Image (cartoon, rainbow, N blue to C red; front, side, top):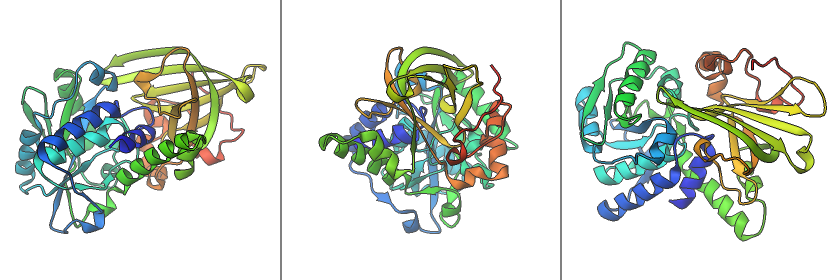
Length: 365
């Protein structure tokens, strides 16, 4: 469980919430209800029906308002009723942060097996950004519940509408709520998911742990598993955070150290890191794009190799910024319209991280 938590924080690209909280919840649920079978997607019966479990809201809120498993039975019961099918399996809707661990707790509470997969291969802040949504699997009927046991069923006319309705209700539920969404039948499952992402999270955590034990670099060990690249080593000198509309918005500025002493890195995030900009402090040259959504942008503690989430970024922290390619399906024109930089209000286009060396773009302040 600890390995999955570390790997989920890496894949969460800064968002998805604190996986350590999810780990504690999952351990508690397993102690009370028993172990959770983790199934390969190929093992899911074609007649089965999978309920992806997720948490909506600003990650920073979960630090003060701990998620509750209390509404899960009512959420899944309502989800099954809304779809007219019994739920046979659960799975994470996203693999990032706490969102990868809560489904394990849900599987234990509900005594259902969990599928080794998710619908993003990372974390993103909005429902239409699920690969399943881009592939045509609607997110609704969606069932959301709060810690008081209240549940709401949403049947949006499209996923953008469902997102707006659910986000509004999430704010009313205290800016953090659990939900079941995007029901997927076993026969269609594998076309709408990222397979083996839970196992990947575990392998990432194992790699970090093994590297520490062997006095090797844990960041390099993790990046080797996901074709990742180090972008920057430095110290956080400024962090600006605000929570609005159920999202945590962050701008972090880092000053380079060592080989990057003449560089400055700026991260911009909406729950997850969206843009990494580099600037040479010895010249008046404009910022250079180092990585951009939908590719994965990750922050690590330079000394320990521990992944750092957006709400954990602090002044003075020594960090390493890295990036890795996203699932290839996110690079299609249809997907980039939903998850590319333009979808988040930036006035430059997507460039794959592997092509970005030396790329300069105009960036709005």
